[in-house]
Length: 553
Image (tube, rainbow, N blue to C red; front, side):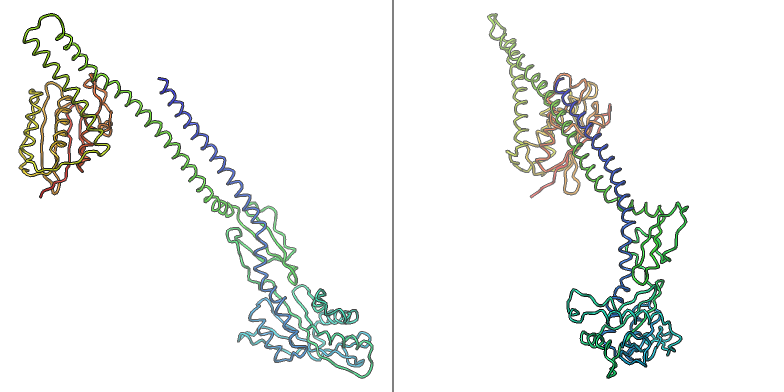
């Protein structure tokens, strides 16, 4: 009882372990879902920078690289080269909608100037307007603009910025790589950028000298371009479609109504010439919930895999404890039954031996009777010991099959006759199968016969002690059937009857059984490369079927 209680405690421990890890898994899943939702909300607020970077990337490339190509012309950009240059811009950067090209002279001419600082003059020779070609890509439409029709503010601001730079510049420090002079040649306004090609160092030195030179009159060429931009022509690149359903370009002053409870919004402003506009992000909250679930599912799957792995471990522990408990019970029953099986013949032998040793004179009939008792009980002990020894040898594979040809009909009849000597009241019937040559180990097969016949006799009521043996050949197998009229076996017990030391609890087992008979048969049949099975009904009897391979030479 103490051991059983110990096992019960262990089972309670396993149950407590399962409950604990189940609660732990639920907490982990809840926390994981919460953290995933927080992560998605943080990503919704932060990943807009990635969208902005990818959307504004063409503009940055245009601003940092393409515009600077004007400097390569050194002020000698003409109508044809300007057309080619702007055509490439229109085809590659669709957000550039118009370009104004100013062909400028830089001189110290006091009579010919558009803007003058001291003796430094900037004069507009001609102005051309370019726009994307409607008929052919790469060939812009061009028009000659009158000087009084252009936006003088663009030129004036750029010219003042340039002349101020020339006045203040220290030409000795221009070559210093830490000094960035390029910013003096840009003028960024909302939706447009004006750019003046950057003179070389020697040209800047010459321009500075023009501030104080009256004669002779010197003239140099410069190019200025003003690019008109349309932010709505930018191609929005949604790098996170799982976060943002709708991304639009809106004016910076645009403000969504606060009563929209179904959607989540965020925004980020454009830089540079597009600073009056922003990217506006809008996503339905249910859509974000789907993204949370999508990210949460792999986490939940991983947690559940670990959880089921722990459950399997708990199940294996429980199963092991359960098997140990059953094994303990089987061993306990085996010791009791085995002790009883030994104790009975030993007691009988001792009584018979005591009577033979008594001082009283025994008749011849009494000595014969006691001698018979001694022989029978000794045979019982010998059979029991042989069965245990044979079972051990089978399990350890320490015996070998001695195959030889036998006539199955003659062999079966001899086994029946041998059994009838022990139990003459047992009715065994057999119809000849006509298998005259069958290669097998007759000793092992005989043990199977004797055990199954003994089992049928033992578990049959006194009025139904009958057994029918049938043998038939099916393809390359021989099937042996032993059908009795016994008490039968419950369906729940069918999987256990071939286990070692297992006994069915009924009135026929009250007088002792070590539970080795059917287990011994199964080991024998398996050792002969065969199979054994049973079909049974309570109160109607059982049928044992043995299948052995048919071998012939």
